[in-house]
Image 1: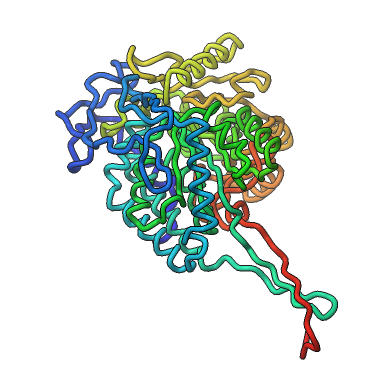
Image 2: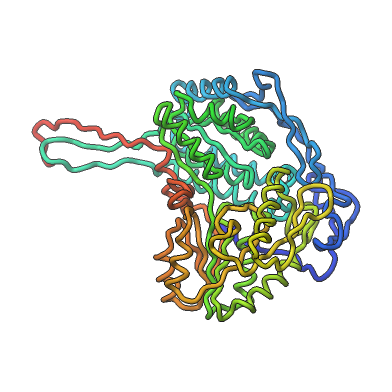
Length: 539
């Protein structure tokens, strides 16, 4: 299957110029009577919500090939962001459950068939899993939207296909991981072996549950490791579902263990566990520091970190303003603004600044907010009350800092966690809304004069995850993309996520790379084997 540009899939939207009716698209999609989609300023976004027809079948921990209750017997609720109501109660794993999962993963690695299985057979299991993902795409999309709040369209047409694509990509790598024969001075045969690192601990976030599952689990399995994965407590449901699909695909027991729980208990136990050989974490920079410390203070396990960002999106004076406005809008508001690489500092050249601001405001006002299961909806709710309150605090901070609130800035309705698409102009670099990762639908538009100034200002941040450059000049694009201290620079595009494109940050946005060939290095050990040669014909 050819690589797919997720950005093109995700950026499709229905026209907001006329009402759309939601109609059922199959037994596992959403159902209910037809509803008219309304724009964000007209009514409560949570009115007449659709109840998805998907069944929540897996709420227990997956340990050693079986779904089991937490050792404590505790559960916790996972909530519908549209209403704040309980979807299901999920097993609450803690240190004892992490111990059980690590023990199962260690046994599967040291004694089980997975590391000793031929690369071809491991690849076939991963390919079978990808086929099952496509077979169950409607159930997965509905669960992902229900538990997370992202639009069903985004889940079904972009994220579930990319989940399958990522595992097919890594399945293709399984039988291509090999070492080298190294020439050395003297009569020696030298070879390097690329060995699986062992038991990998993985902690994934709530904003892209299934894609982050793939970014972590895909390369770890391709390299022959076993895994203990902790889900985000806000979004555990789809990880358990795909865990069941992996068992159906033939993955041996203990190779993939999934624990739901909270960071201070399950997460901290996994990060500090003495029998975990490698750790991968995606989340906030502050939590990443804690995770890194726990790993260092235990067994000094290597850690891959994909952390926060405050990505600049730079619009030069030669840009097509209409296209730039639409792309900047997508770069910020995609996924309710809950994206680590969101273009959350929109720098616009002073010659086109006023025009850009007016058009950006107009586009935000047209953005359709509501029940993410309805057709035509562009923006659903924030993930939970904590994130909702955080975004609202930053909006208040922007107003108090004398930035100009062009539109939005308020809650929609009185149920769920819906926020109006918000645009600030006249933003200064020292304002909190220009410095901190808001992780919500808040666009900050800043003015600049020339290339040198905007490069300096764009780099004056503790983050370095991504950046966007919008210009017709190849010279400008080349100069700026090389000068920006960021792991990814998109030129005249944004959020292009292909399975083969590496992703990761500079500075406090993390270390290591995920996706592509570079991600395999995170899960391999390199061993040199040196053997004397007795009277060799050649060396």
